[in-house]
Length: 77
Image (cartoon, rainbow, N blue to C red; front, side, top):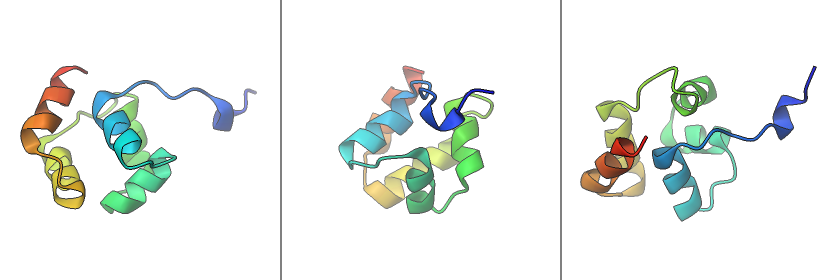
């Protein structure tokens, strides 16, 4: 069985932008900062769940990233 901790994450424009801009090292850390569960962020990354307007609003509220920027990133998914 492969070691999932070393598996490369799927690229995700919105999540990766936030992580890179704020030097967040993991999706788990991002989930904690957003007040979300790690499994929810994982489902968004693997595209088993949409990047919802509610998620974009939460990111905007926590990190003060303009909604228009987040929507542009979401359109690149």
